Image (spheres, rainbow, N blue to C red):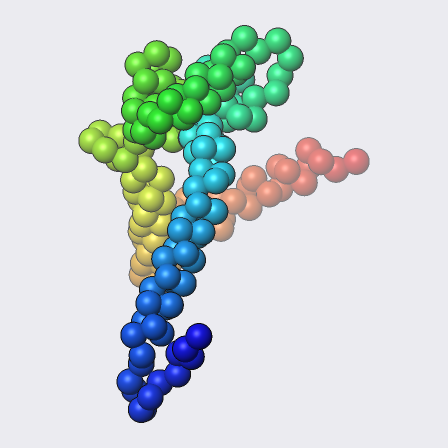
Length: 170
């Protein structure tokens, strides 16, 4: 048996190249096989967490645990059979949307008008921060102008202070 030793610096024998290619192919095949082994259960878990049970409990499909739920077992079976049949993720989600409506999705899709549902919390946060900043700026401007407070002067208030003392005296 020949040894795979470089003859000169940087030069590799033909046997060494074939050995490396076989080793690389074997490792690649093993890695692909290992990664694909649990693919269906991972897909069921991922898709099941993207959908909501339609019984009214508003729980994630795979986490619906209330007694007597008529939908979750049926929906889980449909999901598992669709994954086993090799249906793509988008096809499975579209089939569930056709059958149960868009309320089956745990989160709105990121397309079309539904993007507004993703943007609205950030828009509301920005509007709230802007409103607070404008209010604080207006208060500071009013205080820095030194404008007198609207209301009565001190002599008019003395009458009310005296009345309060009389009425609360024991």
